[in-house]
Image 1 (cartoon, rainbow, N blue to C red):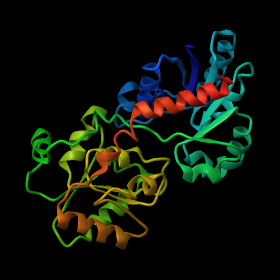
Image 2 (image 1 turned 30 degrees about the vertical axis):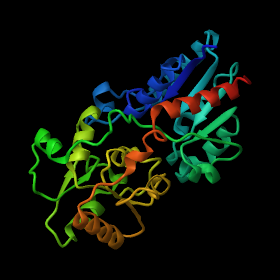
Image 3 (image 1 turned 60 degrees about the vertical axis):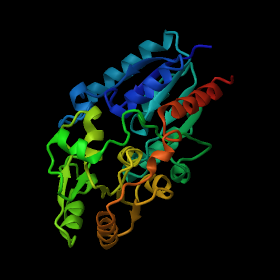
Length: 313
Protein backbone atom coordinates (compact mmCIF):
# COMPACT_ATOMS: atom_id res chain seq x y z
CA UNK A 1 0.00 0.00 0.00
CA UNK A 2 1.32 3.43 -0.96
CA UNK A 3 1.41 5.90 1.94
CA UNK A 4 0.83 9.60 1.30
CA UNK A 5 2.28 11.97 3.90
CA UNK A 6 1.76 15.66 4.56
CA UNK A 7 5.08 16.64 6.14
CA UNK A 8 5.34 19.79 8.28
CA UNK A 9 8.93 20.89 8.93
CA UNK A 10 10.83 23.95 10.17
CA UNK A 11 12.96 23.98 6.99
CA UNK A 12 12.46 21.63 4.07
CA UNK A 13 15.98 22.45 2.78
CA UNK A 14 17.87 21.05 5.78
CA UNK A 15 20.21 18.29 4.52
CA UNK A 16 19.05 15.83 7.18
CA UNK A 17 15.40 16.36 6.27
CA UNK A 18 16.14 16.01 2.56
CA UNK A 19 17.90 12.70 3.27
CA UNK A 20 14.97 11.49 5.37
CA UNK A 21 12.50 12.26 2.60
CA UNK A 22 14.63 10.56 -0.01
CA UNK A 23 14.86 7.40 2.11
CA UNK A 24 11.07 7.31 2.44
CA UNK A 25 10.40 8.12 -1.21
CA UNK A 26 12.71 5.25 -2.20
CA UNK A 27 10.27 3.02 -0.34
CA UNK A 28 7.25 4.36 -2.21
CA UNK A 29 6.08 7.02 0.26
CA UNK A 30 4.63 10.16 -1.36
CA UNK A 31 5.47 13.36 0.53
CA UNK A 32 4.17 16.92 0.30
CA UNK A 33 5.98 19.57 2.38
CA UNK A 34 4.72 22.54 4.38
CA UNK A 35 7.19 24.86 6.13
CA UNK A 36 6.87 28.26 7.82
CA UNK A 37 10.55 28.95 7.17
CA UNK A 38 11.90 31.47 4.66
CA UNK A 39 15.21 29.61 4.48
CA UNK A 40 16.61 29.25 0.97
CA UNK A 41 18.04 26.06 -0.58
CA UNK A 42 21.53 27.61 -0.37
CA UNK A 43 21.16 28.25 3.37
CA UNK A 44 19.80 24.76 3.99
CA UNK A 45 22.67 23.15 2.13
CA UNK A 46 25.41 24.81 4.10
CA UNK A 47 25.18 28.54 3.41
CA UNK A 48 25.88 31.18 6.02
CA UNK A 49 22.39 32.55 6.28
CA UNK A 50 19.79 31.54 8.81
CA UNK A 51 16.14 30.77 8.38
CA UNK A 52 13.48 33.14 9.65
CA UNK A 53 9.94 32.46 10.82
CA UNK A 54 7.57 35.25 11.73
CA UNK A 55 3.91 35.37 12.75
CA UNK A 56 2.85 35.82 9.12
CA UNK A 57 4.85 32.75 8.07
CA UNK A 58 3.15 30.61 10.71
CA UNK A 59 -0.24 31.97 9.67
CA UNK A 60 0.45 30.92 6.07
CA UNK A 61 1.51 27.47 7.26
CA UNK A 62 -1.71 27.13 9.31
CA UNK A 63 -3.72 28.06 6.23
CA UNK A 64 -1.91 25.51 4.07
CA UNK A 65 -2.56 22.74 6.57
CA UNK A 66 -6.27 23.59 6.76
CA UNK A 67 -6.45 23.68 2.97
CA UNK A 68 -4.82 20.25 2.79
CA UNK A 69 -7.36 18.63 5.14
CA UNK A 70 -9.58 17.78 2.19
CA UNK A 71 -6.74 16.29 0.15
CA UNK A 72 -5.78 12.66 -0.21
CA UNK A 73 -3.22 12.15 2.58
CA UNK A 74 -2.97 9.17 4.88
CA UNK A 75 -1.19 10.93 7.75
CA UNK A 76 0.57 14.12 8.87
CA UNK A 77 4.18 14.01 10.09
CA UNK A 78 5.47 17.02 12.03
CA UNK A 79 9.27 17.19 12.11
CA UNK A 80 10.38 19.14 15.19
CA UNK A 81 8.38 19.86 18.32
CA UNK A 82 8.91 23.60 17.83
CA UNK A 83 6.01 23.46 15.37
CA UNK A 84 4.00 20.71 17.06
CA UNK A 85 0.94 22.99 17.33
CA UNK A 86 0.71 23.12 13.53
CA UNK A 87 0.09 19.39 13.33
CA UNK A 88 -2.77 19.55 15.82
CA UNK A 89 -4.77 21.73 13.42
CA UNK A 90 -5.36 18.66 11.28
CA UNK A 91 -8.14 16.60 12.85
CA UNK A 92 -9.07 14.01 10.25
CA UNK A 93 -5.96 11.83 9.97
CA UNK A 94 -3.32 10.25 12.21
CA UNK A 95 -0.57 12.64 13.29
CA UNK A 96 3.07 11.71 13.93
CA UNK A 97 5.61 13.91 15.71
CA UNK A 98 9.39 13.68 15.56
CA UNK A 99 10.88 15.43 18.60
CA UNK A 100 14.39 16.65 17.87
CA UNK A 101 15.38 17.30 21.48
CA UNK A 102 16.02 20.97 22.19
CA UNK A 103 12.30 21.80 22.17
CA UNK A 104 11.84 19.55 25.22
CA UNK A 105 14.85 20.98 27.07
CA UNK A 106 14.11 24.70 26.58
CA UNK A 107 12.30 25.80 29.74
CA UNK A 108 10.10 28.25 27.83
CA UNK A 109 8.83 25.52 25.47
CA UNK A 110 9.03 22.33 27.52
CA UNK A 111 5.57 22.43 29.13
CA UNK A 112 3.81 23.36 25.89
CA UNK A 113 5.53 20.61 23.94
CA UNK A 114 4.93 18.01 26.62
CA UNK A 115 1.22 18.83 26.55
CA UNK A 116 0.92 18.90 22.76
CA UNK A 117 2.92 15.69 22.27
CA UNK A 118 0.29 13.77 24.26
CA UNK A 119 -2.22 14.56 21.52
CA UNK A 120 -0.21 12.85 18.79
CA UNK A 121 -0.92 9.29 17.65
CA UNK A 122 2.79 8.48 17.47
CA UNK A 123 5.87 10.28 18.81
CA UNK A 124 9.39 9.59 17.54
CA UNK A 125 12.64 10.45 19.32
CA UNK A 126 16.15 10.03 17.84
CA UNK A 127 17.82 8.69 20.97
CA UNK A 128 16.91 6.62 24.06
CA UNK A 129 18.26 9.49 26.17
CA UNK A 130 15.20 11.53 25.18
CA UNK A 131 12.63 9.02 26.41
CA UNK A 132 12.38 10.53 29.94
CA UNK A 133 11.82 14.00 28.46
CA UNK A 134 8.78 13.10 26.35
CA UNK A 135 5.59 11.94 28.07
CA UNK A 136 3.82 8.78 26.96
CA UNK A 137 4.93 6.01 24.66
CA UNK A 138 7.57 6.85 22.07
CA UNK A 139 9.36 5.10 19.22
CA UNK A 140 13.15 5.46 19.03
CA UNK A 141 14.25 6.02 15.42
CA UNK A 142 17.90 7.14 15.27
CA UNK A 143 18.70 9.82 12.71
CA UNK A 144 20.35 8.25 9.68
CA UNK A 145 23.17 9.60 7.53
CA UNK A 146 24.16 9.19 3.90
CA UNK A 147 26.78 6.48 4.32
CA UNK A 148 27.58 6.58 0.60
CA UNK A 149 28.56 10.24 0.94
CA UNK A 150 30.22 10.07 4.36
CA UNK A 151 32.92 7.46 3.84
CA UNK A 152 36.68 7.25 4.40
CA UNK A 153 38.88 9.15 1.93
CA UNK A 154 42.71 9.11 2.18
CA UNK A 155 43.68 12.14 4.25
CA UNK A 156 46.41 13.25 1.84
CA UNK A 157 43.95 13.14 -1.07
CA UNK A 158 41.34 15.15 0.86
CA UNK A 159 43.87 17.78 1.94
CA UNK A 160 45.14 18.21 -1.60
CA UNK A 161 41.58 18.67 -2.84
CA UNK A 162 40.76 21.48 -0.39
CA UNK A 163 44.25 23.03 -0.20
CA UNK A 164 45.30 22.18 3.35
CA UNK A 165 48.95 21.63 4.30
CA UNK A 166 49.80 17.93 4.33
CA UNK A 167 51.96 17.93 7.46
CA UNK A 168 49.95 20.18 9.79
CA UNK A 169 48.01 18.98 12.83
CA UNK A 170 44.48 20.03 11.94
CA UNK A 171 41.35 19.79 14.10
CA UNK A 172 37.94 20.54 12.57
CA UNK A 173 35.22 22.44 14.41
CA UNK A 174 32.39 21.42 12.04
CA UNK A 175 30.21 24.54 12.38
CA UNK A 176 30.31 28.29 11.76
CA UNK A 177 32.01 29.88 14.81
CA UNK A 178 29.17 32.38 15.28
CA UNK A 179 26.64 29.68 16.27
CA UNK A 180 26.59 30.24 20.03
CA UNK A 181 25.19 26.85 21.08
CA UNK A 182 28.11 25.14 19.30
CA UNK A 183 30.51 26.87 21.72
CA UNK A 184 33.43 27.80 19.46
CA UNK A 185 35.01 29.66 22.39
CA UNK A 186 35.52 26.36 24.22
CA UNK A 187 36.87 24.65 21.11
CA UNK A 188 39.37 27.42 20.59
CA UNK A 189 40.48 27.26 24.24
CA UNK A 190 40.91 23.48 24.05
CA UNK A 191 43.11 23.67 20.95
CA UNK A 192 45.16 26.53 22.43
CA UNK A 193 45.87 24.40 25.49
CA UNK A 194 47.50 21.59 23.47
CA UNK A 195 51.25 21.09 23.80
CA UNK A 196 51.68 20.53 20.06
CA UNK A 197 51.06 23.21 17.45
CA UNK A 198 47.58 22.56 16.06
CA UNK A 199 45.39 24.46 13.63
CA UNK A 200 41.66 24.75 14.36
CA UNK A 201 39.56 24.93 11.20
CA UNK A 202 35.87 25.84 11.10
CA UNK A 203 33.17 24.85 8.63
CA UNK A 204 31.03 27.59 7.16
CA UNK A 205 29.31 27.94 3.81
CA UNK A 206 30.49 24.52 2.60
CA UNK A 207 28.03 22.54 0.43
CA UNK A 208 26.83 19.41 2.19
CA UNK A 209 28.32 17.09 -0.42
CA UNK A 210 31.82 18.51 0.22
CA UNK A 211 31.71 18.22 4.01
CA UNK A 212 33.20 14.67 3.93
CA UNK A 213 36.33 16.09 2.29
CA UNK A 214 36.88 18.46 5.23
CA UNK A 215 36.22 15.72 7.77
CA UNK A 216 38.61 13.28 6.08
CA UNK A 217 41.26 16.00 5.77
CA UNK A 218 41.21 16.52 9.54
CA UNK A 219 43.16 14.68 12.22
CA UNK A 220 40.12 14.92 14.49
CA UNK A 221 36.69 16.50 14.69
CA UNK A 222 36.05 18.53 17.86
CA UNK A 223 32.46 19.04 19.07
CA UNK A 224 32.05 21.38 22.06
CA UNK A 225 28.30 22.05 21.90
CA UNK A 226 26.35 23.13 24.96
CA UNK A 227 23.25 21.20 23.83
CA UNK A 228 22.31 19.08 20.83
CA UNK A 229 19.58 16.87 19.43
CA UNK A 230 22.26 14.87 17.61
CA UNK A 231 24.69 16.07 16.60
CA UNK A 232 24.66 14.49 13.16
CA UNK A 233 28.28 15.52 12.60
CA UNK A 234 29.37 12.93 15.16
CA UNK A 235 27.91 10.08 13.11
CA UNK A 236 29.15 11.60 9.86
CA UNK A 237 32.74 11.95 11.07
CA UNK A 238 32.75 8.53 12.69
CA UNK A 239 31.45 6.97 9.48
CA UNK A 240 34.47 8.52 7.73
CA UNK A 241 36.71 6.83 10.35
CA UNK A 242 37.76 10.26 11.62
CA UNK A 243 38.35 10.46 15.42
CA UNK A 244 35.80 12.55 17.30
CA UNK A 245 36.28 14.29 20.65
CA UNK A 246 33.03 15.69 21.99
CA UNK A 247 31.17 17.08 24.95
CA UNK A 248 28.43 14.81 26.34
CA UNK A 249 25.46 16.10 24.36
CA UNK A 250 22.60 14.47 22.46
CA UNK A 251 23.39 10.96 21.30
CA UNK A 252 27.20 11.34 21.30
CA UNK A 253 27.68 8.84 24.11
CA UNK A 254 25.61 6.09 22.50
CA UNK A 255 27.25 6.70 19.10
CA UNK A 256 30.87 6.83 20.23
CA UNK A 257 30.96 4.35 23.12
CA UNK A 258 32.13 1.52 20.86
CA UNK A 259 34.21 3.60 18.42
CA UNK A 260 37.98 3.46 18.92
CA UNK A 261 40.04 6.67 19.20
CA UNK A 262 36.89 8.75 19.87
CA UNK A 263 35.84 10.19 23.22
CA UNK A 264 32.97 11.85 25.07
CA UNK A 265 34.22 14.28 27.70
CA UNK A 266 32.86 16.05 30.78
CA UNK A 267 35.24 19.02 31.07
CA UNK A 268 37.61 21.28 29.20
CA UNK A 269 40.63 19.52 30.70
CA UNK A 270 39.31 16.15 29.59
CA UNK A 271 38.64 17.47 26.10
CA UNK A 272 42.23 18.71 25.92
CA UNK A 273 43.65 15.45 27.26
CA UNK A 274 41.69 13.24 24.86
CA UNK A 275 42.36 15.46 21.86
CA UNK A 276 46.08 15.42 22.68
CA UNK A 277 45.95 11.61 22.81
CA UNK A 278 44.25 11.40 19.42
CA UNK A 279 46.83 13.68 17.81
CA UNK A 280 49.76 11.86 19.44
CA UNK A 281 48.58 8.42 18.34
CA UNK A 282 47.72 9.58 14.84
CA UNK A 283 45.29 6.72 14.15
CA UNK A 284 41.93 6.81 12.43
CA UNK A 285 38.81 5.54 14.18
CA UNK A 286 36.73 2.51 13.23
CA UNK A 287 33.26 4.05 13.18
CA UNK A 288 32.65 2.86 9.63
CA UNK A 289 31.74 -0.56 11.04
CA UNK A 290 28.39 0.98 12.08
CA UNK A 291 27.54 2.23 8.55
CA UNK A 292 24.60 -0.13 8.12
CA UNK A 293 23.19 0.69 11.56
CA UNK A 294 23.39 4.45 10.84
CA UNK A 295 22.17 4.24 7.23
CA UNK A 296 19.30 6.18 5.71
CA UNK A 297 17.81 2.90 4.52
CA UNK A 298 17.48 1.61 8.05
CA UNK A 299 15.98 4.91 9.23
CA UNK A 300 13.49 4.80 6.35
CA UNK A 301 12.38 1.29 7.30
CA UNK A 302 11.87 2.27 10.93
CA UNK A 303 9.90 5.41 10.00
CA UNK A 304 7.75 3.34 7.68
CA UNK A 305 6.99 0.97 10.57
CA UNK A 306 5.84 3.92 12.70
CA UNK A 307 3.64 5.17 9.86
CA UNK A 308 2.02 1.75 9.50
CA UNK A 309 1.45 1.58 13.24
CA UNK A 310 -0.31 4.96 13.17
CA UNK A 311 -2.51 3.66 10.37
CA UNK A 312 -3.24 0.43 12.27
CA UNK A 313 -1.79 -1.68 9.45
